[in-house]
Amino acid sequence: MPERRQARWLEKSLFDYHLNDEEDNEVLNILHEYLPEDLIRKSFCFPVLSEFEVVRHFTRLSQQNYGVDLGIYPLGSCTMKYNPRINEEIAALKGFADLHPLQDCDEVQGLLELLYLLSKYLSELTGMDYFTLQPAAGAQGELTGVLIMKKYFEVKGEERDEVIVPDTAHGTNPASVKMAGLKVVEVPSNKDGIIEPRIIEEVVSDKTVGIMLTNPNTLGVFEDYIGEVADIIHDAGGLLYYDGANLNAILGWIRPGDMGFDITHVNLHKTFSTPHGGGGPGSGPVGVKAFLKDFLPVPIIDKDGDRYRLNWDLKYSIGKVHSFYGNVLVQIRALAYILRNGFEGLKKVSAVALLNSNYLFKRLCELEYVRPYPDNSKPRMHEFVVSMKEVRDKYGISARDIAKRILDHGVYAPTTYFPIIVDEALMIEPTETVSKEELDEYIQIFKNIMDEAVNDRDKVINSPRNTSVGRIDDAYASRPRTMKPSYKWGAGDG
Ligand SMILES: *Cc1c(COP(=O)(O)O)cnc(C)c1O
Image (cartoon, rainbow, N blue to C red; front, side, top):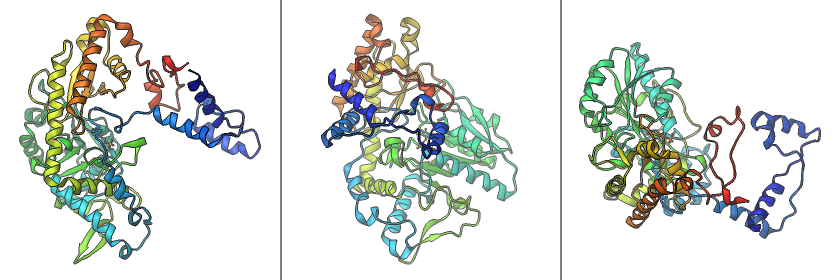
């Protein structure tokens, strides 16, 4: 493939730096601190390229990527829905894009009104009373929420340091608890994938700060006992934190506040269609019931008559968790999505997400070796989990192999190996923004791969072959400074 080789050559020369001069040593030292030796260029070659060469280079690079604009992206837990372009148009309006965060409140009344409105809509949708829009992601929302819980008991003068987290939880839940300096008490889910009141009763005590729950949980199963669990926690003086990453499943139908939760985060980049792109920026607003208002990060936006103002006067505020007001243009996109859909439209969003998820769930579980987890036919919510254990035991094909082979078909793979309690897990969330045709194609791809697992094993374990890079070193991705990479280019790459 001469074109490919040319692209490789261009990439090489574009980034071929030479850093031998005195003045460059400082830069080099910084580079050495952050990059492995073999990734730092030793020679310099300023690119002498024409415009079309540069355009072709970057276009080629962009075509090596896959995203929600290309097709189904059923990455369970991540809610990879299509991001409507109207959001982008609104956020790009000069009146928003050209604002400076240090402008006086009187000059940005319009913006403050919108942020206030967004807080109100989020309150209405979650059953909370007040929101902070500062946190930049769900995980940061969790930390904010746990810090609020911690401070609440400090102010009350109660010594509590335990947060209950089920074994189905997203890894960020226990991580947030630890970061806040509290202890994680893990509780097991039952064979139906949900937590039982008697398990909570066993661990709850006067040390309990509260519980963190995702509902529906990461198995796509609704926590049927949420009412009882809320009572147990509240009777023990604890608080309930709602991980709102799965809000897309219940939007407009039921509310965390009505299930008994006191604090909620919402991932705007999941449920409210703002881009996840490139690792951010995201937005994870946190809502609280009225009795926790004074603990929120400052400032929050309040309304006096017809004026909006920044309220810095929250008695027990945990402080700031983000500069200024969080990622404002992301918040504007989410508001555009809410207004464009309206309340009935948002209800339809979750209804269609559930319909798509259950259709895919039923059809995939008809295939041999695809086992639902939990192993029952109870309807799922917006996502579901299957175990590939049987095909691994019989043919040595792992969930990872299957996910990699799916990439060869030009579509994206499900989440793998999460939740960690499921052996060979694939976690699948189609969202509402795929058509039945796309779902049927996905089912057919899955069926073909399961046939290959039995009849053409090599094809599966040597995948992917049609992508720009082959199997990458997953462990390296999370430990870049202590390990050497061991990725290889895709087989077709030359
Ligand atoms: C995505 C997710 C989070 C973390 O949210 P980020 O916005 O990625 O930080 C937490 N819990 C669950 C269940 C999630 O799916």
